[in-house]
Image 1 (cartoon, chains in turn brown, green):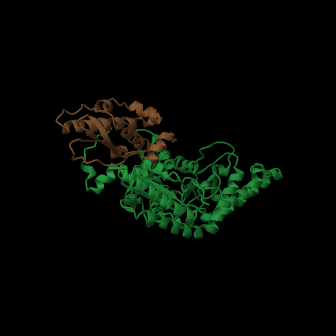
Image 2 (cartoon, rainbow over the protein chains, first blue to last red; image 1 turned 120 degrees about the vertical axis):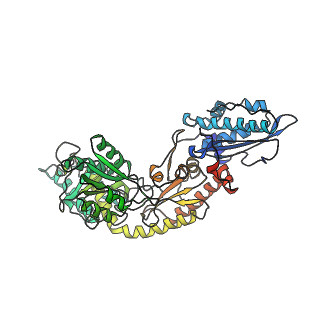
Length: 136
Length: 404
């Protein structure tokens, strides 16, 4: 399969690979996917509670090049966004930015799920109700 | 200067040996006759080339030159062998025994004869990829007309105990067929000593051209016949009609001659290279060799790298042309059925790479491959949440994954 230049770039030079301290109250962690399906994404956000802004984002992904690129791109986009802005990120924006082919759309869906799951985790940690996560 | 990418997918196909091309060239140009034209020198010259090729081929597998039926390749040979026996021996029985790790050309042909009323037993294999001879013995019935079990596996290189299998088949009055595609020209294959009645093989896995193969069909002790699957001019003793692919056949002949002369030296050299590649890659944690290490083709290794995903790994080893156990073309991944049959979990089957070396593989290429694979696996593991969990001692099987 031919990958787009942007996918290759994110795969070769992934942004924000790493781990945030999940014991911290202002860190939200989302773990989505399953090993049997060939994709597992873990996406973490660190939130400045005063401004409700995401100050840092990290990911680790087990998956194909498109899955790695989708999560890498997501962390780039998350930094500096407010929680509400982050929630508004739609998987189709990732598809467009990375020029993902139809068979790889699920990678972008997983990235969107990972974002929402991380935000939900952050909310729960801070006494807010969990987000209703739509399962694709 | 090392040329990239490096071709290590020689179980898929091998490059054409220049000496084979040289032997073929006259038959692609001046000697263009139809080998079946009996009444002029053009036909005679072509037939002479074909006859010489039969000699070269029969010397490699220790058969009579009349026992070679030319086909378009191993898939056709597999079809002709199974369907041909099924039709020819229908009076005797309708039961065929094979294994779950055969090539699709065998498995799908067996499915086809099931639709025609045949009965097929698919023997399971152990974690080495080997069948149990006790299972085989138990599966034999008076209705069993054919046992078809591959010589060497295309994905793992595992070599089956051919002689023991043949003995069991014969003890029950069944014919023994083997798909010799990966083995012929790579390891000694002797149809007499091995007790093979029918064998499929092809030129392009042993440095010959694509589009030409053969079916060995025993002529005595017992005399075996297969019903033709292609009707026409009655070529190849009536078992396979169609004008002979003379240049291809000449190429197959030359490839067999070279294999006979060079196979032992090639195997010795390639097994040293393969073992070095394997040993180096196995220095990484959570790395597993798939299939039998003891009973294996000398030029093949199949290795799983746990906690990295197959397609991501393929992208990471872009400087190598290798095959992966993962056929990921859609959201639903299909791991290799061969590796699954060995008992591998889906994730290990996905994260496997098959390396197939050739006569033309160099030490320098192997050095590069070792470094390249190690680098890719290390990088992907650093990026893998599963690897991090494994390092922390988390049991991944206990996690409730959100299947999507």
